[in-house]
Image (cartoon, rainbow over all chains, first blue to last red; front, side, top):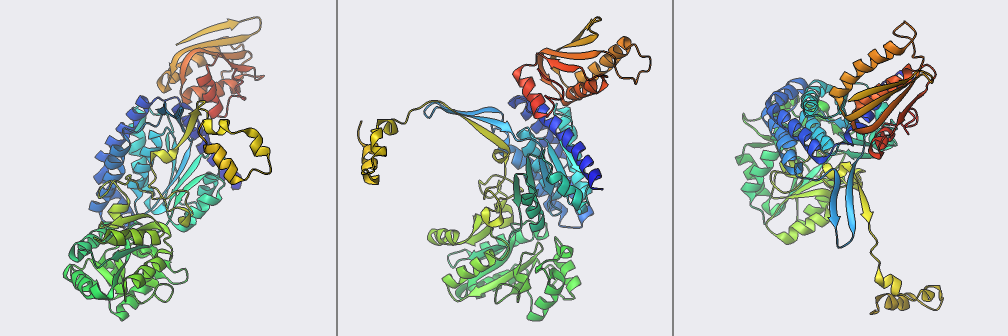
Length: 477
Length: 109
């Protein structure tokens, strides 16, 4: 069995490595020709793929999945199309340093069930732009739609002259096989987007990995914020694709002094505050209590479905279920990440108490991911940002759309968001082409005159201390 | 895009390739190579190993596709006593075989 797995993995990697060998001979023009062809084909398939994904997974809303496909195709393409990713990418005559981009080799990409086609397309685009063949491992529940996205991209790439096997899919459903491929010595990099277990497996594989895991996004509404605007923005984000984006708001935190106004505004904008009994009922279906994690059965479900499963009645047209909680952690299961239109709500007696709550929420499974703040006081924005451990602090913006970039701000559009070391990631950036190239630096001789003007014997003299050496180093010469 | 030179004394077939060996050209070459192999092989069975050595000369080649690399691997496997080598590859082509992990197996010179 194990031998068979290894043989299959060898076959996939042999194909990928030959594709890599061919691909590294491409120049920028040939590479860009492939990328534009893939972008066009994928953008044209945005609606079909969105509908397929919703039909297959039962998660989210097809109209919003179209939006995600547009981010993964058009916005990613517009962002990377002029990037130099082949050969000499910079040449600084002042420093004497030139930079050369080299491809990495076969990239093993894991795609999630929540954003299946958009993530696959985005990863294919950034891999092809950097001349790296990609091997996609789809979530088993989204294998068909992810496979179709990959097929469309691959056919377009081939027609534009890309190497055979530059896009491959591995069969979904076998964790053992996924891990065998992941750990294969010929994999150059793992690009894993998914849950904690997956990301840990990627980092434990022995291969370099960019693994991006879960969030638990707190949003602080400051007293300086425009409250109706903030609530409208939060609703547009938390309802987007029924809350499946990992950067979607998970809790709203406000000071007591504005709590009443915020509550009223949520209600006015068709959100529903659950009673303590209703919170308990929703907890029972939304959270797996043993692991304190969200139930896969409510991911991307509508308010109506969640209400029905919980056995509660909510007004028709309710957009979000709000659970007013007193504390963070086990005693309040709804304080963890839930990728569905359920939002925790906290009030605090003052600003610092509110920020401390945000820190607790941030550290409850979402370190390094994203956070949001609504404020018009820049001092508070900067203070909040320095206290929160998040790769992206999204200001006066829906966090789902804001964190993925390209729409509400100038962050690189991306469906894989780095979470820094807090999330066991190597970067806090939105992953894009620059993370998929090895940059070689050609360093021409440029003497450091200060260093060479120091009397060398002073370094060997025990009587010379740091001050003497600093003076010597910085003297005029 | 391809010439042949057969040395009957040493029984070595040199295949001289030219230009850009992309997927389409490699497919065309494949059929031509097979036919050449068959015509020279003294064994009648078309699946039999070749009883002569193979040299692929890449002096005038500036691009190789994965399909062409597969042709090289197939050629190496087809030669009975393994006398296969690749001659005159430029450094970029040499690097391509190196990345594919095949430069030693294919004896890329």
